Image (cartoon, rainbow, N blue to C red; front, top):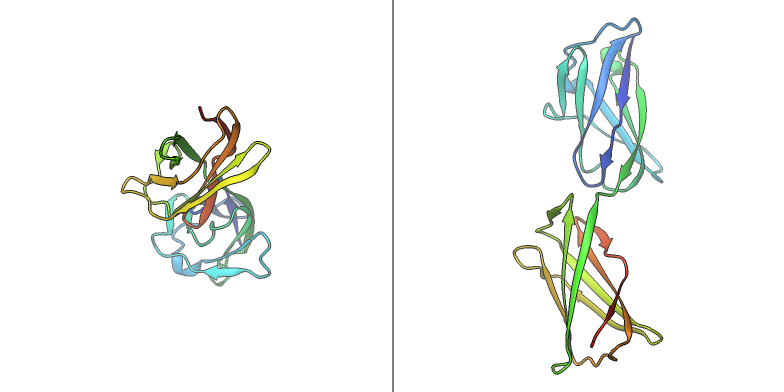
Length: 207
């Protein structure tokens, strides 16, 4: 009886992820030529009450060499951060079911916010953008900027869903008088592929 072995390496949220599956007998003999149509992949994200299943396409199940296969786990499986279990089931072809666990990690996304204040026009302008793996995200869906004045609470809570062609948001708050030489806490939120990321808090003083 063949025993599948699955190695769930780093799994990044909202990305197709390739995991490696080694098909071999109990005696260590490689099992070659296994077709994608013989495979059923089941998965459950953390908190799911039941497993979801799919049969990988030919492109998602590629044999590399000596019973080694590359299984592409699609975005549907990696949509949520947290623990995920993946089962490779080929019982119909004489294989046992193997269950592997991994953790879907949020992608390393950095959100940036550059504020400027025109006291004469009483206008506070923010440029908001984000990088993923060091590359500019060109198609974010929305952003939000909040500004909290020290000792006075939130003075700006602005939204935008209109990035420019490069993925930059220009967010403005008008008719706004800010106290000079006072600390303001600024945080930007940017949503991309349905996931919201934050810049963290930055302190700013306006002269």
